[in-house]
Amino acid sequence: MKEGWPRLALQYGAGVQVLSPLTRPAWFEEEAQRPRLGGALASVLGAGAVCAGLGVVSALLDHSGSGAVILSCLLPALFCAYWLLQAFCVDAAAGMVGRSGRRRLLLALTGFSFLTWIAYSALGVAEAAALRAGGSGAAWASGLQWISLPVIAWFLVLTVLAIRAVYRVSGLIAFAFALLPYAMLTAGLLLVGLALSALHAARLV
Image (tube, rainbow, N blue to C red):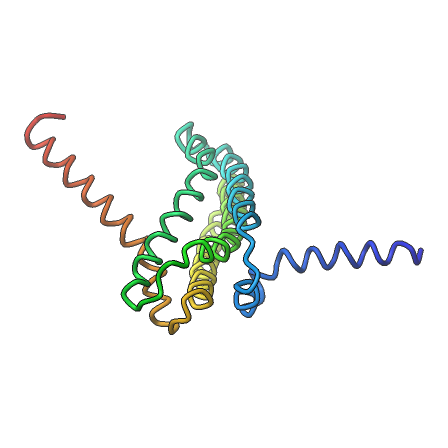
């Protein structure tokens, strides 16, 4: 019986270590001293794979069609693309305050924040199951939609903490840097929409 306790303690310690980026704000300051880019990449890919599986389950539950299933399967690649885009945008913006050139360290820290999307995807499955159940399930689904908003905010807060730990800037500046990828994606979608509208007006598409 006593021999099992060390193993149990090791398992518990490993579990706490995995959850540290999500539950301990000071973790980012500590991790900045010994960054693990491989672990960050594994977190991004692992979170993408789990979210992909949950997304497929959610799509099957609410009959979203093959488009939703395909999009869910692409989540690991999309997570990696956003992870890289975020690092390039933030590091470029950090050049304005003379602190660029830390992209690798930023990647090593922000990768772990993608684990929060597992909780978001799990809520999506619960929401789809509630809608499928019918009756009072619609009310539960509406409540779950509201619960998912703090999860998104959680991801953003972790990103801000990572940026502060890497570039040593104020919280407000780190928050502004964290929003840059969203601004880039929004601008890209706007430009694509304008281009398609122009082509349609010219009857080229």
